Image 1 (cartoon, helix red, strand yellow):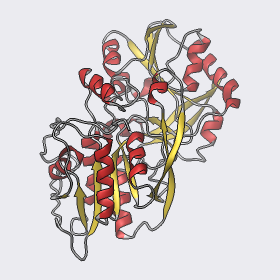
Image 2: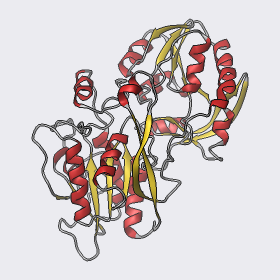
Image 3: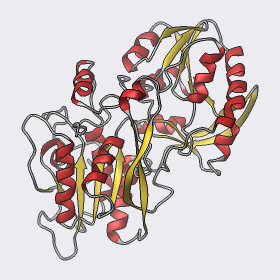
Image 4: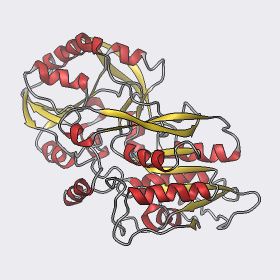
Length: 409
């Protein structure tokens, strides 16, 4: 089995009190007690490493090494810290049980939590084997629920290790998060975990774990498969549904959207085109290739960057005014924060909310059944900026106004 949760210890996470947990220091019982519930915590230190540098994922040691060479940093530690804020009012009721170092102990201590640390990890790196071992250990220690931080590769490890034998909730920190086991944002994951342990959430359901073939994904071929199920607390408002593909019948609608976008393009503005089949239609209309699961950049209807990462976009933004064209993920409704982390908070801040062009077929909007479009950029200020009514192009010169929100934190 190829390592997926691989990561070197000694990250930039310092172990100091984190911003999210600064308001209250949590004191837990390191060995449990009659009134405490055990919350297992597993952090994949390399989750999301390939996102902002445009590598489409973080699976495999070679990709992780390349991402580090490109200056990438994993968001896993601070996403985990944000999830732990839900414990601020439950310090006498919840005990954290976790693995050493970057796999959980560091971030817990950084948030003022005294965890019960079990197991061991290699001095140089952690792999999928450590993730699986941690999951089994926490289950065997009777954790009431295991909160894991990562992406679909980490979810696959959880399936392999524990399947549906223990309740889990995922903290979204990876690049690919198509599975239905993740909360809509880290804080929601913490609330779900604590709510389940306290009995406020009582129902569990078996949720699908889906992952892509990353090598095929990088070639623009979307090849996903079902790997199994994890048992997740049923809280529809706080847990993302699984990604659903766009039906082929939407082709004509995508063509109409593309025609309208192309006609409105300004010569002195560059267009940052996000991933997806809807946005691909825009480049197809111009006779240009599209990186299906990447970000491409147009100027005067010509490609000036292919499969751009965050650094590429920031460099170009120093030269040109820009607009961003993005489409929501079918079924989930996420606009930002799932599979397009190259469009980072800094990129969005520079471009501005007024220069976001949201495109979606009407069928995709209707499939949300009134649920809002979602943003989870890893920056609460940007999430708040983007929240509210937003125009969505649904056809040729056809628009509707649809709500966008950041999931509750």
